[in-house]
Amino acid sequence: MRPGHAFFALAKLTAVEALRQPIVLLLFCGCVVLTALTPLLLLHAFGEYGKLARESGLACHFIFGLLVAVQAASSALAREVRTGTAAAVLSKPVGRTTFFLAKFAGVACVVMAFSIGAVLATLLSERVAEKWTITPQLAGNLIDWRTGTWLLVAPVLALAAAGILNYLRRAPFGSAAFLLVLAGLLVVFLVSAAYDRTGVRAEFDFRVDWRILPAGVLITAALLPLSALAASLSTRLATAPTLLLCGLVFVLGLLWEFWFGPAPATPARAWLYSLVPNWQHFWVSDALTGGGTIPWPYVARAVAYAATYTGAVLALGALAFEHTDV
Amino acid sequence: MTLDATPPVVDVRGLVKVFRDFWRRPTVRAVNGVDLTLRSGQVFGLLGPNGSGKSTTIKILLGLLFPTAGTVRVLGNSPRLVHTKRHIGYLPEESHLYRYLTPRETLDFYGRLFALDRATRRLRTDQLLEMTGLTHAADRPVGEFSKGMARRVGLAQALINDPQFLILDEPTAGLDPLGCRQVKDLILALAKRGKTILLTSHLLADVEDVCDRLAILYNGSIRAEGTVQALLKVPDAVTLTVPNLPPEQMRAVLALLRTQIGSEPRVDHPTLDLEQFFLDVIEHAGDSAAAPTGAAPTGRVAAFLSGERT
Image 1 (cartoon, rainbow over the protein chains, first blue to last red):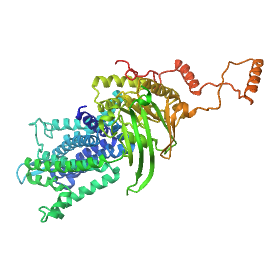
Image 2 (cartoon, rainbow over the protein chains, first blue to last red):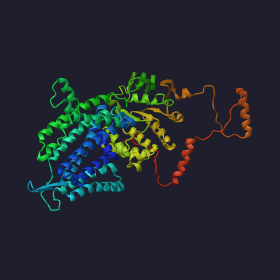
Image 3 (cartoon, rainbow over the protein chains, first blue to last red):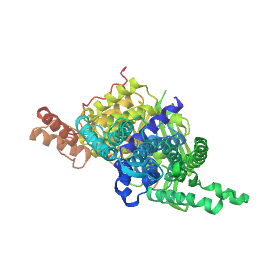
Image 4 (cartoon, chains in turn orange, purple):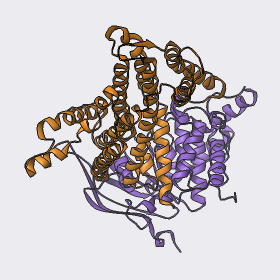
């Protein structure tokens, strides 16, 4: 038997099952709609130009992504062990480590698909909150209502199309809607990038703030160790305690540098510092304020940092699952 | 070669399973010193009331639970080895299916786990769907199914690899009499091909119909084991069945029996088997019925399971 055969079948099944769950679709649409509404509803109140839209979008990406990761990992492992589908699969020629890692791979695929959508929504949201600067004295902000409207309408149209597909061809609504929302966001992005807010044709990446892309990659990288943690905890715990512990690790990771870093003085403090990922490495939107950028070498180092934690957490999770009664 | 001379498909010695709570304190001794041997071609029934340790024993045979003590060999290997499971089919007590997948996707998925090529998966999926009467519901999510229909999908997934050793935990639970009869026919057809089957059921008549050996578990221990004939035989009585006799002849026969056995013989009319009666009624009703909404089994065993070249 080819070793990767069961792995890919299980990873695909995990991704498909997760995408068909209404809660994942709800979280995805919630993230997109909140990101889209931020510049439309709050811009006039605070006058924070694109910064507010950008940071709201990235925050939605992080928080909703965490919820998607925990929900998908928990239903892929804890619920499967509880309902017996894990037992049914493990009675086939599938090793426990293969099962566990394939479940994580499926969840990671869903988190990445979610992240692509969240980054597209953030790029579009920032585009809606246009800042026009003619001279330092002559600057202001305008709303690109055309892009904003399409950003909000695209998910609605995608849901309607998924409903029609479900009615006509019995296509599973959840996964069809998720993919259509993603495709809808991509279409809106590609079209709006080629026009200005009055509908006049412009160069392709007209007012697209590409600086958001590395910020989005960093948040996606941060979601992977959290997904691994959720998957590992799900081998022993139910959804609620998994969510609680992942939330705790998230909060601790934000405070960790304040308590132990950035350069721990003693080996004991260094060891403690390495226990929890420092999420501050992945939340660098402040660097974008005032026209700053996030250098790609920094992104590569942060992704390697996340991959190390992910690998370590998965190793512990696989070990725990190897000795679990199912 | 006699049956007992063949190498055992399952060999269990001194099996003990103790479940523990969160603090590792023992909570229940589910299996307590079970010895079990299944030989190739046997249909073995494992009986017992709820909580007697049947499902726990089965899960240990599949490597899903870890024994506290004792040795377990399945097909000559540890049940925890992945390659051992290539030859095993398992129908759990509850069907345990992915609710968002359709039956076709479910069977394709399990076929992939056995590394079956695409053509084989497709062929076996079609045959199993036809056998279980789910062809018309092949593209509906399993989550919408009744318990009986889900059970049929569960049975189909257990057979996708044409297993050498089949474990059926309550296979007829939730099935209508038609489905029960079909499962029994399937078990007999597989046994005829030399497959080994371990079966648990609360429906003792089902076990009696198909098993050639059985064990009765109670509180985690085996209380009786042997062939069905040996266990159920009443050694000091026989049953005579004769055509319906005229009153004169009947009186003469009874008088003769009285003088020979020295006591009053019991006389009653044989009755039809209720299962057979039900199946006859359904067969007649089916001739005039519209398209079925539930399972519509063809009554045929899938070609690849009956040993036909596919």
